[in-house]
Every structure is written in C-alpha cells, then in structure tokens.
Image (cartoon, rainbow, N blue to C red; front, side):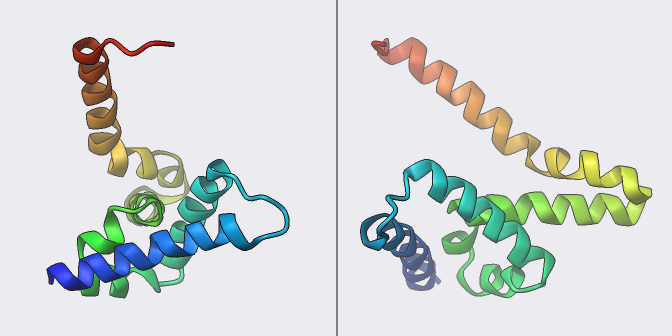
Amino acid sequence: MLMKAFLVGGAICVIGQLLMDLTSYKITPGHILVGFVTTGAIFSALGFYQPLVDFAGAGATVPLSGFGHLLAQGAIEEVRKDGFLGAFKGALSAAAGGITAAVVFGYLAALVFRPKG
C-alpha cells in the first residue's frame, strides 16, 4: 500500500512540475494549486477520483487534487441530505477539520519559530 501511495502521489506531483517546466506560458504554483483542486473536484464529481483513492489511499488524498475531491464529496453528500442549499455548506463542512488544523498548527509554528517578514 505504501508503494502505491508513493507512486500515485509522486505522479501527481510530477504532472504539476512538468506543467510548470514545459509550458511556453509559465504556469505558476498558484495556477497549479487552483488547477489541481478544480481537477480533483471535477474528477470526483464524475466518479473518477474515488477509485484512485481506493487504490492509492494517502497518495491520492494528500495532494491538492485530494482536497478538491474532499470538497466535492462534501457538497454532494449535503445536496443529498439538504437539497440545493447543501451545495453551499457541504464543502466547507467536509474540510473544516483540515482547514482548522492548518490554521492552528500554522499559528503555533509562527509562535515557536518567529518568522521574519
């Protein structure tokens, strides 16, 4: 399982690096971020991303495309429960734990390491 996660996660990262290196229009990391989250959400909505998650586990959920998948699945789940209004709250409800952890640990790291800037 570990090797599958490594290979799939690495392949996703290689795609992003190739997009930045080989395009005539220089794609920035911001473009990659938005593109991967959007692609993950679209692939999730079409049913393509869950089989990849089932195969590779964290290799598919940790990259940014996995965050898009999480947002899409949260929205889809809430639409099933609450109808149209669920589309607006489902994505953030599904990702709330990860977003909160990122903010809290980022804040704690800033307190400990005293960033300059």
